[in-house]
Image 1 (cartoon, rainbow, N blue to C red):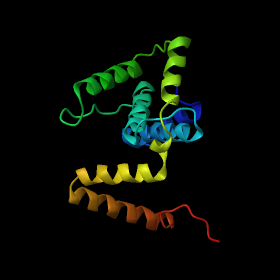
Image 2: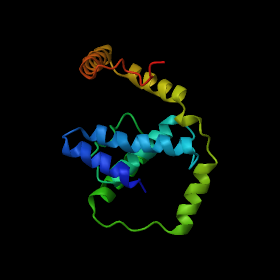
Image 3: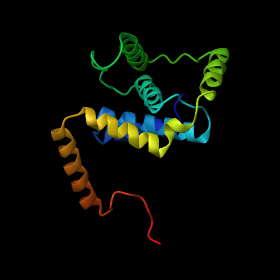
Image 4: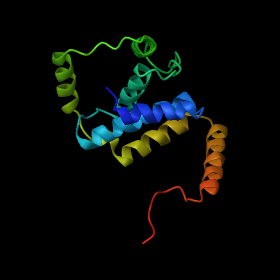
Length: 159
């Protein structure tokens, strides 16, 4: 179950008219924090992102279904199930036994999936799959945002 603050941040993004991807990003961010805190682990960065997206769909974020060629049939089915669960208002509580079993299984996984290095590696490999034009457009956008906010991109404080 996502934290209340995460749901509120995602709802605020929706009110501001931000894209479903941005709204879902809040859930992925929460997932990374949970892994770093040791609440559970993830076998890979991809799995951590998938868990976050699943939570977002179940919370009612209108994310697109993954495209056919990119993921397995099983993953598409699960995404559809998550979306349906998000649309239906009924929120049945997960049984304690199932919840414990899930937590125990995830605790066995490593914490490296949420490290800065692995997130950076994931972002780079994901960007490589997109075209050069899309990467360039994203870089131009980032530069424009940077000049508006007056920051250099990083969150380092001056010494």
